[in-house]
Image 1 (cartoon, helix red, strand yellow):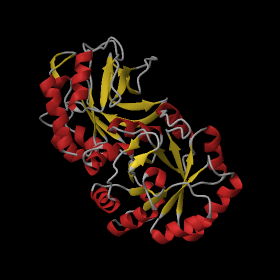
Image 2 (spheres, one colour):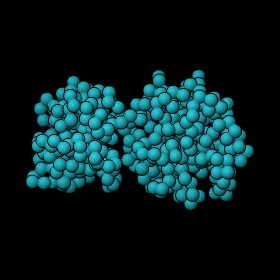
Image 3 (cartoon, one colour):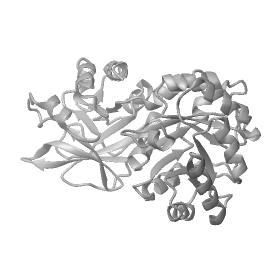
Length: 386
């Protein structure tokens, strides 16, 4: 399979990177074995493997050959390339794709290299760091565009700037969010911004088991704990491993939160509204229409004013015998909500295979007060079904 095709399928693809060191962080995994890691990444559903072949990252071209010997996944060669001769050598060693940095190449040289890559059967990941470079990538006709959260001059990570660029990228291109992704929630945020894939290196190399960390970042469904009103309950949800923290701001609920509370970097905040949206600073908005003084049955998940998922829920305090069937029939990303509990979440996931699950009242001691043991049980059951 070509590198581009591996990234362009449904859902969020993951490119797992082999990188022994980083100029900004120093040694990450000096003894990294590219062959062993590539094989393990393939077993844990990586879409492709990235191999640093530059000595500044502790890599060499031999690492590409080693990875090729152990894996059939598309291989991305990463380094600082500027000549056709380099591309020919990388292709001979087993590369399926190469990284080209707009920062280092003018438009004329970039066109030459893109043409050479096409002639050699290589895909090109064209990397942009700002809006001007993103415009250049579009004008050059780059089919795969990488948006790096790391400033290569200062090595600082700016995920907000990265996500803004991902949102701006032309939708008929394959978009890869690179760097700064250490949690499922961060990967999901890139996906909702418009990324087709994430490239993860340092988070994997620092993990005790890189392949297990890859599986963690890629696992679905995402898990939301809703109806949070207290900081201690947010902390309990985060410690249990939940990805989303939901804060109900609708006026008619006993679970109304005082505001959107702070969440750790491992989570995204979700403001739940009925009828209208207020500016509350949440990462995401979950919006329901208002019907007969209560929320409507189903809702939508919104990011930056754009619908990014459907919330298949149940009518307020009403049975819905077709609930799971409706969720199963829904298209696109589905968040399954309504009546989800530690006792039934595993079965619900196995039947529907949703993008996310959402529980609230089943996790309470009383409205708005969470039972931490049930929160843990819910998240654990959801993870066991992934």
